[in-house]
Image 1: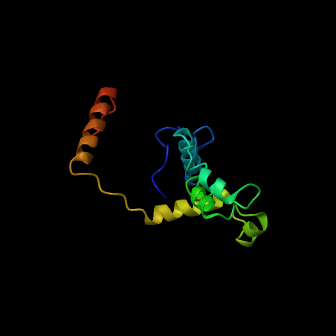
Image 2: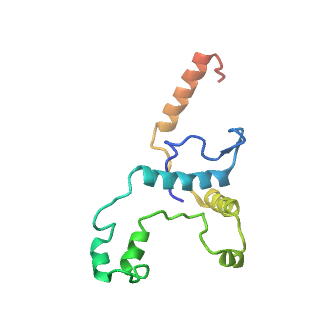
Image 3: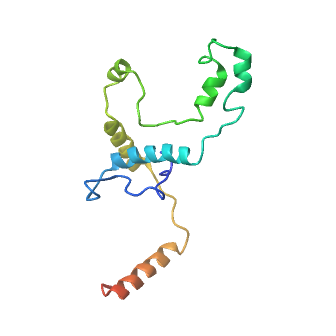
Length: 144
């Protein structure tokens, strides 16, 4: 999975039960929705190319646009969910009938098993620790 899209814009990703519980699968589902929202909020390009003006003239009225290469190429710039399954029911059932949450939990487990974060730059951990200790002192909860 890519970095959490929109996590800095949308509050509560992964939270359930009014924020009392956190669910990794829900986090990935919410992230996918946030990515789609972010795409729309940033603006969907509308121009001669995305409207396929030349292709429309080329193909002509009442003809087949769906199999044209341009339709396929433009489809790729739209929403590309990684978890949401858009298969027809029979294909979904043949693939195991996994729910969105099932797929999200599998993806979360995969991330937790394989992700190796980049180490913090030298000195950052110490600076963070100093900030925490200073705040603890200000709040009267310092314990070292």
